[in-house]
Length: 403
Image (cartoon, rainbow, N blue to C red):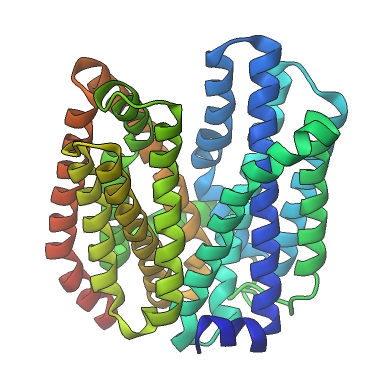
């Protein structure tokens, strides 16, 4: 079933897609508003960095537990509760405009709730979509969420003159309520292990999820490969700013072009995969995505002009779309349903940690060398990680299939 046919004929999936798109658009709205609020009230770049860190690192620290919640309770109720909680926290922030320490706590709490929602929404897809349509479903979800994230800052720019920062935050809170209302139309999605008696504690479930990832060969290789690729390439956003302004001697508009190129490539990649992804091997797609996303950075480091760097980053965006769709589809097919939430929760948490480490290590490398060197090192490291994953993954999948 193609993407358009899936949207037309599968009402529950359409509701999930719409809820995620609205929620992600609201997230990008509030992120812009909060960054501007913190920058204007504190005047410190460090405060903005702390805001971003609270939103990215805090969920990663709790990822084993957030995924375990998805496997323990009805997925529909989990997703609705997460959206309502995020909406309530945004409403509190908008009304109180608290000082920075309390704001960071509230932002971290909202991010953790969002991190519970994310694996739950991914674990719900196999229950709503036929197995042969998973590629189209994951591609369509990726297209919708990334288009919404790209649209959010533009909506924020249009709303600021009319309603101000507080109004934009209230709009985000309202988006979570709309998302929860859409999710209410889903059928019940009970946990796969709902028949168990005397279930152990949430911590035990979390440890079991980590143990499964370590013991399942294919899942372990996919997770480690994804972690390594992000670890090397996560610094590219910072490096692209320096590349445009210092190496290529271009202005701020060139920075926007390079940062936007990946987004355009992502949307194009998701659109193509939604149409043709079911014809491809997901193992090949995963490795191709790893390779393209890494080699794209390596070639960007060799770029002689903004146009060349733009082209390389756009192609890289398509590679990121491929690795995202392939990872989600493979895990949805390989992992037992009762463990799927924990696997996704831990994977997303690991990616957050890898990105944070890449910012730190890549920033140090950027200060010590230059933007082209940093991008080439990042791309080369990601390419090596791709080759190692390519050697290990086919045998690991055979072992997992036999198991």
